[in-house]
Amino acid sequence: MLQVSVLREQRERIVNGLAKRGLKDAAELVDSAIALDQSRKDTQKQADDLKAKSNAEAKRIGELMKAGKADEAATLRAAIAGEKEQLKTLEQELSKLEESLKVQLYKIPNVPAERVPAGAGADDNVTVHEHGAIPQLGADALPHWELIKKYDIIDFDLGIKITGAGFPVYKGKGAKLQRALINFFLDEAEKAGYREMLPPIVVNEASGYGTGQLPDKEGQMYFIQEDGLYLIPTAEVPITNLYRDVIFTEDQLPVKNTGYTPCFRREAGSWGAHVRGLNRLHQFDKVEIVQVCKPEDSYRVLDEMCTHVQGLLEKLELPYRKLLLCGGDMGFNAAVTYDMEVFSAAQQRWLEVSSVSNFETYQANRLKLRYKNKEGKTQLLHTLNGSALALPRIVAGILENNQTPDGINIPKVLVPFCGFDKIS
Image 1 (cartoon, helix red, strand yellow):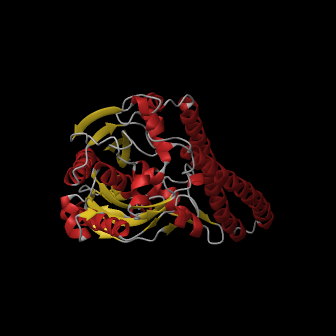
Image 2 (spheres, one colour; image 1 turned 60 degrees about the vertical axis):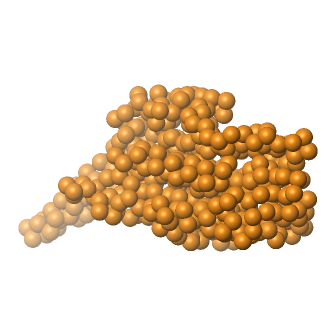
């Protein structure tokens, strides 16, 4: 979330920036938070002044008793008792104001970076890079949801039988392809200097608030009522929360982590070819990369992370494009996001396979994730994350783009991980 001091000091910049998201009530949201903070400060001052007054009067009682002025001391004691009740009321009011301020701050999304274009949705995103030739398939080419039946490698009906829609079962070479991709992505991340983590796939409420999934995406997460825990939508949540309430020294930065987890999202459920098969699932596998760094380094790190993801797609020989998302299409927490999309030759459409985002201090402020600089001053860090990569649409692209009359060719870079070069 945004710091109140930043809202107050940079109000015009923030309101104008939020306009890129199409947020019509930005000024009202910001001004409400500033007003609540002022009320909190005023109430805090009243409580502090009353507490100081009561403490001074308590000392005065002892002096009066020594001077034999018991009646005056009794009167003062009665006054102090009344002040304690006032203080209790002020502290209750202060607690309510602090909670109201926190709730208000949670309503304000991150401010888009200067480079982010204004826009309402996907049509306003900007293509900044394209790579690779679009495969030309024959008239008999099949979409992946037909290919997986033909070669018996992924079974949606079995998934429905044991769980429900959106939970596929991977079989034989389909399962091995999943494992090969995970290992390939993790190995490439390790080569790039990322330390592998294997985090829990359920998190508590504090972790959901720490990275901004709560309260913004509460309805999209699977919730375990009895335990108060959430199934993770991405490894970003547990990995970034490893550093909640941590203060780093400069020589410990940057922090670079990678991790494989299954991911769970309730949002899948609309109809149409664009969500058929692997295009959108309730459960899927993903390798994530996460960095924590000093503010002055974060945009260099963002470019570095994008380059890493692009390198993976190039090694997989998949045609892709890189998009700079407009304000209206960006996630609630992000200051800037680049999406990587792979072209699906059988579907004749682009499929998003990765989002790489810089959150600047937005998550770090929630997480109280800071570092102490060389001058000894404590500052908020910047957090970044990216899919490197999400598997379902990568698999869809590999299956569709590499289909031949004799089977599906496996990208050369995956053959050592798969143990086979063709699905037939």
